[in-house]
Amino acid sequence: MTTQQEELLPATRRALLHRIAVAQTEGRTPSLVAAVVRDGRAVWHGARTSVEGHGPDENVQYRIGSITKTFTAVLVLRLRDEGVLDLGDPLEKHLPGTGAGEATIAELLAHSGGLAAESPGPWWERTPGSLRPELADVLGKQPLLHPAGRRHHYSNPGYTLLGALVEELRGAPWEEVLRREVLEPLGLDRTTGRPLTPHAGGWAVHPWADVMLAEPAEDLGRMAPAGQLWSTTADLARFAAFLTKGDDRVLSAETVREMREPAAPPGAADVVDGAAYGFGLQIQRWDGRLLVGHSGSLPGFQANLTISVEDDVAAVVLTNCTSGPLPAGVGVDLVRIVAEAEPRIPEPWRPLPDVDRAVLELAGQWYWGTQVFALRLAPGGGVSLEPLSGYGRRSRFQATDDGTWMGLEGYYAGESLRAVRRLDGSVSHLDLGSFVFTRQPYDEGAPVPGGVDPAGWRGIG
Image 1 (spheres, rainbow, N blue to C red):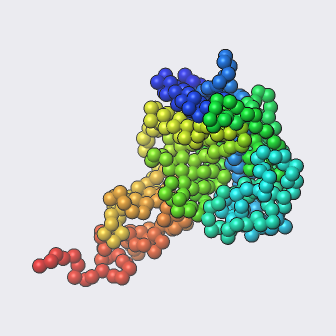
Image 2 (tube, rainbow, N blue to C red):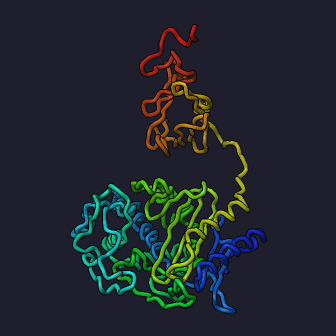
Image 3 (cartoon, rainbow, N blue to C red):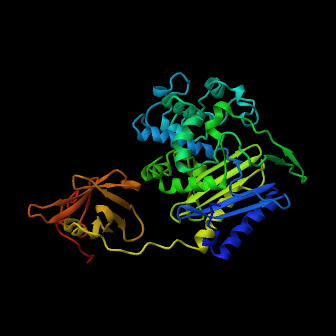
């Protein structure tokens, strides 16, 4: 057993079980399995099934559909981290002759390469991959529907191209590379391209009667990097922990953090829904909680992986029916139940191990015009700058070798923050991308752009 169920309170475990029981009953699915991850390991596993006396456990395989794309994205980012490619490279540079080569690798990862959503008929999810033996068969005569980079348009063929890119640059089949570089290092022994016993069968449930129809489980061939994999709640729980904290044997924490950042231009509907897409990961704001992960479906199966990095809680939901319960909604609820019932215990406050007095001198209030900001010291020589009013631009800054700081997020991402000193060594002001921050509002002793009225502050009289 991989789970530590006793680590959750009994009331929390019952609430989790109740949620999946309702989903299985109301969604009319043959079975539903789920797991919850906290602090980097599985702490709960649950299952509901229509079969008397038997329930699938965390080692039973289900097909995970488009969660496969996240694994493919990991392989591509490994190539980038090794310097084999740049995300700004057009696909044509490494995989010529596809007819979609003007899209960059980053755009394909974020589904903004302009490609069609699906492969030309017949429906690729219910037919053998042997019907589409070549990339040209997957892409069709008109692979591009939109200008590359202009909009987010989910594309299964786009991830087929990324899988082909991996094969070209590694000189080996996609699944072989995945096994060697990701599955084996992370211990995902039950994640495979073809089902291994024990595994669930895929079913369609009649919408108006409680009867079922077996669904085909086709080998997707060229489309495999977009949706081929089978996995278990135990394996996906470990994968969720990796996507939260990284693993230097596969990808660093910095790179998995990059995967979780929005990378595609959102459409108007996406903005309304609070949805975005990173590199192989879906991102959504749901009831005030920022969630990342991916959903997946193939005939007979639905799957979801949901992660709240801030709460350090993740959920996996797998079910074996074509339509029924919404795994994404169940996953969100499982994360919420644990995060709210047993909120994360913060680390103890500890003073900094050392401090640069020249940086400590900068801490406190600063003014951009008349708006007041606070600069605070952070571990590792970094600082943060945020408005005291609660509204306005804020960012964390990372120390650089030249004594300045580089913005890490928001409006100031990549911008340079530096302390400007007078000849006597005292601090005159802060310069942030040409914005001047002073110790007093419109300090006449600082080089405020446009100058300061010599009449000074005054009332109306």
